[in-house]
Image 1 (cartoon, rainbow, N blue to C red):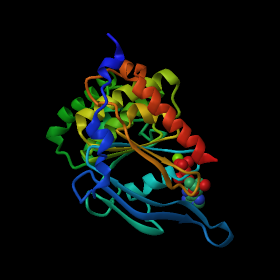
Image 2 (image 1 turned 45 degrees about the vertical axis):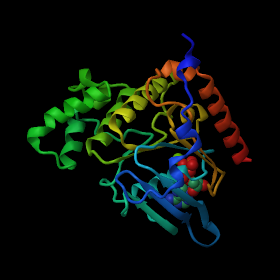
Image 3 (image 1 turned 90 degrees about the horizontal axis):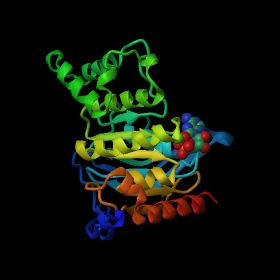
Image 4 (image 1 turned 90 degrees about the vertical axis):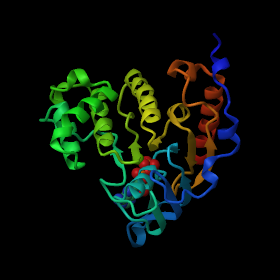
Length: 280
Ligand code: ADP
Ligand code: MG
C-alpha cells in the first residue's frame, strides 16, 4: 500500500482556513488583538513579541514555531494568563485568561512532585480541579490509560524516565478538563526516539480529547507532524510571517504513514524555510 494514497489533501482545510473568521468566544477559542509584550525599563527595555493578531478556533492544533528567543514562550504565557500584555487584548473562550482555570499547561520540564507517586500527582491535580474524591480514582485510571502510564501508577516520580515524567505532566494538564491545552517545547529535552513516541501519542490524545492545543516548538518536523495549523514567527520581537493550515488529515493515518507521506515532507520543508528566512 502506498502511503501517499491515504494522505489525501483535505481541500476544506487547505483552501478555507477556519482562522479567517473571529473566534467569537466559544470554549477553546483564543483571540489575540494587537498583542505586544515589553520587558524592562529605560536602556533595558525589550519588546519580546508582537504586535500579533491571531484568532484560534476551538479544536485547532496550533503550532507556534520560530527561532529561540523570538517570543514563543511569552505568547504562551499571555494565553495562559500568567502575564498581561503591554499592548492589545487577549481573550480565551471569550473571556479573560485565568491561570489554572482557562487552560492546562505543559512545560519543557515536567515540574511534578518527585516524592509523590505517578497516580498521586494526578490525584492532586484532580483535587485542585475540584473533582470529588469518589470520582478521582476512576478519572485517574482513565487519564493514566490515555497517556500509556497505567503500569507505573504506584511508582514515585524519581523512579520513572524523563519521557514518562512528561507523560505524567500531560495527564496532569488534561485533569482539569479545560478546553485549552498549552504546551511549551514539552519534548525538547527528550532523546529522539522518546520524543517521536510522545509526539505520536500526543497526536492521538489530541484527536480524542477534541481540545484546542497550542504547541510551541523550534522544530519544523514537530510542527509539520502535529499541527492542523502552523504559525511561524519572525525573530524578536516575534511577528507572524507564515500562517498555514495543514493539508494532512488528522485521522485514518498512522504516525509512520504520516511521516512517510509527501505532504508531510513538503510541509516540513515549507516550515523549515520560513523559520530560516524569518530568523535572518
Ligand atoms: P522563546 O520562547 O521564543 O525562546 P521567549 O518568549 O522566552 O522566547 O523570550 C523572548 C524575548 O524576551 C527574549 O529575548 C527574552 O530574553 C526576553 N524575555 C523573556 N522573558 C523576559 C523577562 N521576564 N524579562 C526580560 N526579558 C524577557
Ligand atoms: Mg521558550
